[in-house]
Image (cartoon, rainbow, N blue to C red; front, side, top):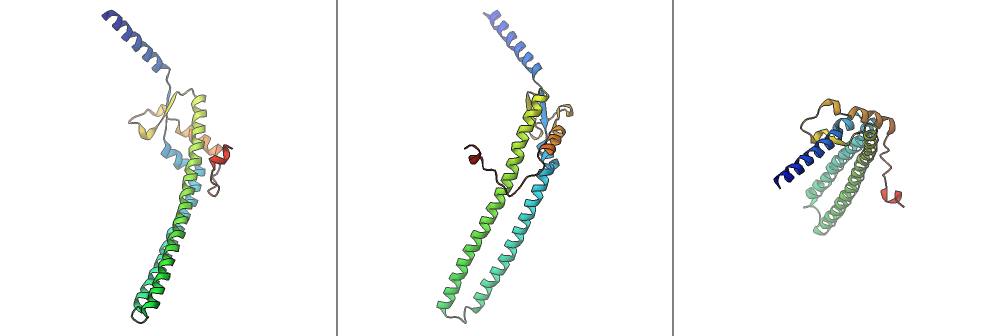
Length: 183
C-alpha cells in the first residue's frame, strides 16, 4: 500500500514538473503602459483640463455665493423679517440649484474618466491576448502584483508599441454604450 502511495506521489510530481516546463510566463507593467500610451495620456490631459476648469468654476461661484450670503446677513437688521426670510429662501434655492449643477458636471467628468479607462482596458486586453498567442505565453501577470520578475519575460514595450499603433486617440465625448452594442 505504501508503495502505491509512493508511485502515485511520484507520478503526480512528474506531471506537475512536466506541466510547469510547458508554461511560459509574461509580465506587463500597467503603470508604464498608461504612462506611455499616447492616446491615453492625451485624453487624460483633456479631462484634466476639464477638471481644472471645473474646480476653478466651483471656487469662483462659491466665493460669489458666499458674498451674497454675507451681504444678506449685513442687511438683516435693515430688512423686515419677511423680506429677509424671502431672500434667505431664494439663496437656499440658488444654493441647491448650484449644488445640483456642479454635481451633474462632476458626474459627466467622472463618466469621461471611466470611459477613457474602459477604452484603454478593452484595447489592452485584446492586445495582450494577441501577443500572448503570438509568443505562446500561457499566463501574463501584472508587474505590480509580483515581488520579482526577470526582465527577459517583460513584454510591456511590445504591448505599448502595439497599443500606440492600434489606439491612435480616445474621444472623451463619446461614451461607450455596451448595452447598445449587444442588441
